[in-house]
Amino acid sequence: MATTDAAAGKRRPRPLSPHLGIYKLTMTMAMSIAHRISGGALYIGVLLLAWFLIAASTDAATFSVFSAFIESIIGRLVLFGFTWALFHHLVGGIRHFIWDAGYGMDPPMRDQLAWATLIGGLALTLIAWSIGYAVR
Amino acid sequence: MADHPSGLRTPLARVRFLGSARSGTTEAWLIYLTSLALIPLTLGFVWLVLDLLHKDYNGVRETLERPLPSILLLAFILAGILHMEIGMRSIVVDYIHGPARAWALLANTCFSALLALACVYATLRIAFT
Image (cartoon, rainbow over all chains, first blue to last red):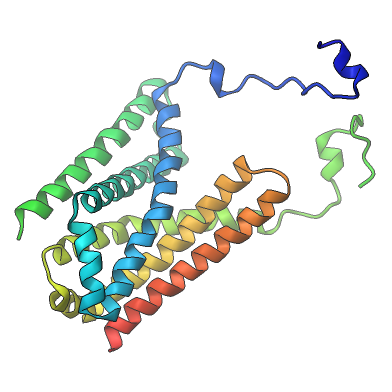
């Protein structure tokens, strides 16, 4: 079949240079794409902030619809995801500042910074939610 | 440009005399600027949300009518939405090719602008009514 492709006027796709698929996933790669994914999640998540502000600016009845959603299990899960994305992206941004300043690029340090992003983001999320549940 | 697709000209020769990039670093600069601003603003925003968490409608209104939460929210919204618009722009140019790219860039800017307007409008409405 491959030899008849040219005769049929079809062009075979040009060979591509090796891409992500062939490399072993490293922590820095994982945190790189996690930074994008968390940024994308926040992009959608800002709709939640807009909903909250518009509801609060309208009246008590409109606000109660938002309140009911955010207090539901699904609402809490969405808010937890938003919190994690927010803190993960924040800590990841600080990691990029450190790298852009020229520090922490050597082998042990860059992996430690990548791990610190994951652990720091999760830790800040859990701290914020602990405060949210503890302080009333 | 009448460059033959398999031309022997180097990439440098192909771009020479087309003009300097000039505003090429604007995006990068704005991402740095908004990132830096968003570090304290995000912490402030989380603190504000924790403060609002267990309040009812009247409590939320009373808090958001005060100047500091209002200004904090406005700064967070403006820096955050500018940051996310530029961020999504870089995702679009990385993954979307062909004519769809222009539409995606257009949609990104329109979505971000409308979201910013809606949030700013609502914040000001709470503050001034």
